[in-house]
Amino acid sequence: MTHQYVAVQWTRRKVIYDAILIGLMALYLLAFMQTSHWIADLRGIELETDGVAIRAYGSAAYILLHLTLAIGPLSRLHPWFHTLLFNRRHMGVMVFLLGAIHVSGWTLPSQPWIWLGMKTPKLPWAFYGSVAWYNNFGDLKPLVSLFTVNRHFGSLALFPFELLGVIGLVVLFVMAAISHDFWLANLTAPVWKAIHMSVYVGYAALVGHVLLGALQTNRNPWLAVLVLSGALALLTLHLLSGWREWYSDRADLAQPGHSWVDVGALQDIADGAAKVVMLSGERVAVFRRGTSVFALSNVCQHQNGPLGEGRIVNNCAVCPWHGYEYELETGASPPPFHESVPTFPVQLREGRILISPVPIAAVQR
Amino acid sequence: MNNFFVHYRPLPPGLKRFVLLVLTVLVTLIVVLGFWGPSLHNQYGPGRRQPVKELSGWLLDGPGGAQLLVPQPGQTTQDQTFNRVLLAGPGKTIPPPAVMDHVGDWVKVRGSLFSRGPLDVMNTRKATPMRPPLGTPEANVVGYSEGEFTLRGEIVDSKCFSGVMKPGSGKTHMGCAIRCISGGVPAVFHVRQNDGAALDFVLIDDQNRTVNERVLSLVAQPLELRGEVIRFDNLLALRANPDSYRSPK
Ligand code: FES
Image (cartoon, rainbow over all chains, first blue to last red; front, top):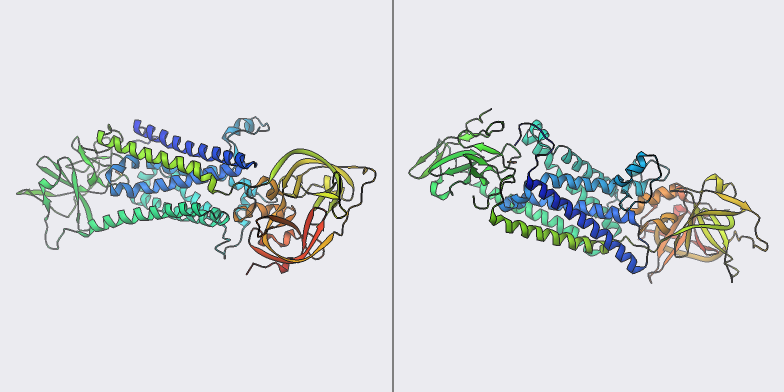
């Protein structure tokens, strides 16, 4: 939760998460490059290390993008996946960084030599990115070449797949650049969310980049199977979680002419937890604390997380995504935080919960 | 609070096992993809980059681009007196004037040599004219016709294809190949025969000129070319007008 902006609000778990993330990606990159060396040695041929590094970083970004996009629907399908979701934005930023290195190379190890104006020796991790490797050293500037070299826009098989990669990377850059809560608060959650939905445009562009690029040159059926099953798995997860939400949203309990709606029995809700009901097109989280009930908008002000999947801690409803807290009675975050969600009038009558579907405006602190 | 997770609170014991399971799945996935992935990519090729060498021979501009005719050591046949090494400048360019000013001379050049099968290409910046060794045969500039053929393959650049890039052909290589060919590196028609063996032909038009600027939009795509195959020592050339290049049916 935010009352002033810091680069990252680190918690021990975020540090562990990032360490595992970086460790896994380093493991993948090392395994990919080392195995490539072994295969080349075995075949007695020379390895093109720049090309291998370009493939290693590109595929790492592509795999991690799938994992990042899978976390959303997975945590909609089961709350245990919230353990992956709370730091998903760092995963997204990592996808962008890997993609950027795929494109522009890894020049960090060479920087001291560059700063000193000296000729850089061949360093173990340094490599030309795909833009320079394929477009530099010629009669045009690399970026000019990138955008003009292939003009087969009318042919699917020859389509300039590089441009699809550029679109994907630009989308990932925008996501990474505005991933901070500063932008979230200033753009407002709905706008920020809407912009973040464009990650699917980016994903589609990157699938196209791979299908019309790597898979055009490389007809290995297993590579095609991997790429297609990745896309299929993501599609299935999104359809499943979307269908589940649509199915539960269908049961709108509000009835015209009734100011109080019976949403169920108190005993059906576990103490300290909530259930989500649909009232006049709005999802309402109905929390139970002992014999008291509280109704709050289900939409967390942070990133529209499902408040109703949270729990009560210290008299606050805690969002399961990133832990934003809202007081049960007022819907306001405890000071010094400013976020708040609308609440709904609620009554308990003979063990039944009645809610008025007209929200009480969120309390502003 | 059973299994309710918030990142700034202690991890409930019931979730620990789940997190470990997810981690195991992720590590397995990464290890499998990391070790299996490289064998699925076509990032291997027979091209070799040899250490910097010094070569002497006749410097010619054609067929197909600048080349050095290095006498074959030992036994030579009448139609293969020289080993022809195509020449390029540093990067995706033709050799600089310090080389091209000596066309027709016997020269010494120095540079990295890239080789793929019978195709040799050297990166060079400078040629030093010398007196040819006694008894050096003259270059055959007419070549030996092998007849008319229809060939299927793709246009690649001779330089990156023969050494630097793996695989050095196909669509992902199109950008690089176009830059090279646009920069004057000899354009080569790469043909894979039915038995898997490859043949590479430098491309010339019916006036024996280079075709580079006229084939840029046809690079790295399947093509069918009909023309006369001419052998210049170890180098094969395909003489056909670029207007006649076709997509295979
Ligand atoms: S969505 Fe982030 S805390 Fe609720």
